[in-house]
Length: 117
Length: 386
Image (cartoon, rainbow over all chains, first blue to last red):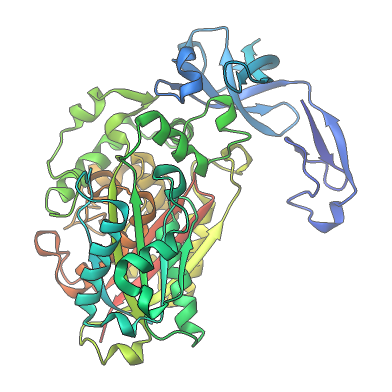
C-alpha cells in the first residue's frame, strides 16, 4: 500500500494526494512517497448481507474501516475469519487479493483485503 | 425571497406514471397553487440524481420544460445534481437566479423514477453517490457505509438497537397521517428488529425505500410575492457545505461535518438559532442519519440525539417536530425529488395546511438534505410570511 506523507506536517494519506488537505499550497511538490506496513486496527465494521451483483457469491462478508498504524484510514474487506470475529479494535494486516473482474472474459483486477493478526 | 406555490405527486411505486408525467403533475399543482400561467415562468431548475441510469434519459432539464408545455416559451431549464441532495440544490440554484435580479419567477422541480429497474441495478446506482474507486470497488454498498457510521455511533455514544427502531416507528406514525406518503401504516419496534438484515446492524426497516415521485415549488422575490398570495412562505436562509466523498477520509464518522457547517451558515444568514425552529425535515435515509442530523443541526447535544425519538421529543407534538411528513423513511425517497418534497412539507406546516400532521404554531421550519454519505449537505430555513 503506497500512499504519501506530507513533507510539511508529516500526516500520511492513502490513496496518494498531490496536496495535503491540512497544509494546502505549501505542501505542493512536498508530498513524499510512503509505503504503509499494511498493519492496522479496525475502526468500524459491518457484515454485508445485501450486496452488489459482482459480490453476490461472497455474502455475507465483512466491510471495515481500518486505521492503519501510520495514521491513514482505508476501507476494505476482512477475510479468512468468521464475520462475528471482527470488532472495533481487532488488529489486521493487508494482503493482496482479487477484487473482481470486468465481465467473464475481462480484465481481473486486484487490490487489498485484510486478515486478522 | 418567497415561495408562492407548492405541489407534489404521491410518493411510492407509481407504476401508472412515467418520469415526465410525474414531473408535470407536480409542476401543475405548484403553478395552480401559485396562480401563475406558464408564460410568467422565467426559468426552471430540476433536481434529478440519475435519470440516465434509471430510465436511460439525460437532458432532463429540457425534457421537463418540454412536457410541462413550456417549450413554446423557450424557457431556460437546468438539471441540477448532488446525489440525494439534488432537490435542495435545485432550489438553491433557483434562489441565486432570482436574487441576481436576472429572473423574476422561477420553478423548482425534483423528480426521480426508480422502479423501472431491478433491485441490483438500483443498489448499484445508489452507490454512485459514494466513492466508486475507494469504497464500492471493495464491496461496500451504500447501506454498509451507513452501517459503519451506526456501529461507530453505538461504540462512541452507546446508541442502542431500540433507539434506532424508535426513529422508524415515529416516522411511520407520521407517514400514516400523510396522504402523499409511500407508507401509511404504523409499525412496531419488533417489526424493525425482525426485518431482513441489510448490513449489520441495519435492517430493512432502518432503511428508506425505493420510490418514484416528483415535487415542485415556485419562487420569486418577497416584494413580487404580494401580487400572487397573501400567504407567502419566506426563504430565510439557504446554505450548502461539502466534505470528503469517501467515509474513510472524514475526521469523524459519527457526525456529518457538512451538516454542522451548512447549519451554521444557514443560522447565520437567517440570524437565528436552532431553538427558533418549530418543525424540521431531516434526511433520514437510514435511522442513524436522523439521529446524527438532529445533533449536527444543533437541536440536541451530541450523544443525546439517540434518545429523542424514543422519548417522544421529536414527535409532531414534541419539543421539535422532526419529519412530520414521515421523512424519507415513510414518505419515500425518490432521490432528486426528496429535497423539494421536504420544502413542500414545511410550506404546508407554515401555512397551517398540514391537517392531521399540523405542528401547533409553526412559524419557522428547516430542511436538511444530504448527498452521498455526507459529502454534500444543503440546509434551508423557511419562515411563515407576515
